[in-house]
Image (cartoon, rainbow over all chains, first blue to last red; front, side):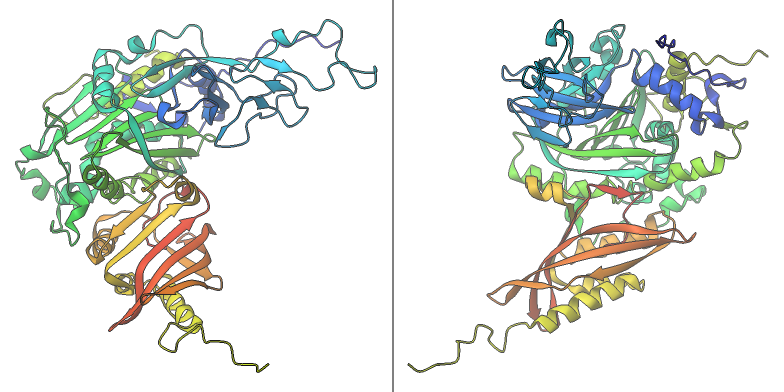
Amino acid sequence: MDTPQPAVEPRPSLAWPPGGVTRVPFQVFSDPDIYAMEQQKIFRGPVWHYLCLEAEIPNKGDIRTTWVGDTPIIVTRDHDGRVHAMINRCAHKGALVCLKDHDNQQSLTCVYHAWNYGLDGQLKSVAFRNGVRGKGGMPEDFDPGCHRLERLRIERFGGIVFGTHSDQTEPLQQFLGEKISAFLARNMSKPLKVLGKHSQVIHNNWKLYAENVRDSYHATLLHTFYTTFRVNRLDMDGGIILSDKKWHHISYSKRATLAPAAEYQESKVHSAQYDSELAGPALLEAWNAYEDNITHSIQTVFPTLVIQLTLNSLAVRFFVPRGVDKTELFWIFLGHEDDTPEQEKMRIMQANLTGAAGLVALEDGCINSFVQRGTHGSPDRAAFIEMGGRVAESNESSRATEAAVRGFWHGYREIMGFEEAAQ
Amino acid sequence: MTITAPEKTVAPSLVSHADVTELLTRYADALDDGRVDDWPDFFVEDGIYQITTRENEAALYPVGIVYCEGRGMLLDRVKALKIANIFESHVYCHINGQPTILKQANGSVTVRTNFVVYRTMYDGRAELFATGKYLDVLRRDDAGLRFEERRAVVDSRRIDTLLVFPI
């Protein structure tokens, strides 16, 4: 009889260069051993992950499938209204149990051998348990109560269902920290309404997108539309807030405070070279929804969740690694249940700004693959990340900084256990 | 019993199948040949252009991938892609199926046409980019037959890399 092998812990060989979070070795974007280790330490580790929105499973029997890293996940709302999350993998042979993006069912049945589970993932029945015509069947001591779809712990906040594989994960609000929780509640606490969805395959390692959304330095340089139409510029009041752990961040700006800075002209950034008249101005019709006057915000939750409010365009983005050099980025455009028809219309128009064809953001679909392709052959070289200093701290006066990018790497190194090479 | 000719269902002033096919082909050729400046002219002044997914369509979600209302928004799309947006150069090849005329009423024609779009990147990579159906409403005015509404419903929820040129 085979003896079970101990779980092999991936041990990639990586020497983090001196310079702490201001240097990122390119190896982390293309090494399959590091990818395997991330699956274990981050995606199956003590981290909360975005699973779905409660608005996507409003009714009893509602089912949604998703992924946490490489692991397929089912989220359900049972007949008592309770929400459950479990791995989409039959307890028998390991086949996928749910084969749809979303569904509504009384129970879950694996199509392979008809093993049937409750919406809480507990095994209820097994086909031919007692055999056929008295022959075959499970052993006498088979106990369905000992088998189930592997459960994830869940917590819910701001209309979002979060899940974790680990018993060691700290409570969600502690994981998020006070500032991140408060801003999440600001944007998401009212009942949400899904306005539309799609996804986008980007040809880069998932961490390049995680960096990209924390990078307030690039936003107004690469994304010309932002700057030109004055949706978001670094010469508006704004700032960067890092969570206490530095893993998550908020970047915000206030459109009404624009005071055009000479640097946009002087540095000849391509993003400031174009007049700002829209032939269809309805695109940018907006209302000021919050007393804090913040008109643009990007909020990240480590590792793969983003919440955007671009003018009034509220959207959840989450991204799923699909291999070391491929990532699927999901967009869910949202409104609030109590939006007026006029407000909903403005959100529909502003949805043109982001997404796979977003007038301001479509560049992010390719920019990270430029880095992937640029770095692929040079795993021993490193990125240089010193804009705004060498630390990962909040900066409430300027977004000309890579502080939040450094914050991501702070969290990543901590959870992956990547120490700096001895100097 | 006398046999009479069936009542004509298509009056001469209505739009013919050939007219529809000609418009759809001209539209595809303009985009495939890089004449994106011509694109807004295929629409009436208050025309609507949308790209959405089969999933959004089924769920009656109003937001898809692109939504333009009125020629101004079409012009802004063209302006943005020519001046503002950054992307790697590529071309499309549209293949339209046979259009089906679903309805003609009040001077408008409702048409459904399946399509596929192949995309070829500057580095030679050629692949299927989108497959789906156009749901069109056409109207004839002084400028000829044009789109009152063109909705491209793509089958996949997933776009590879990005979408910048209209389909």
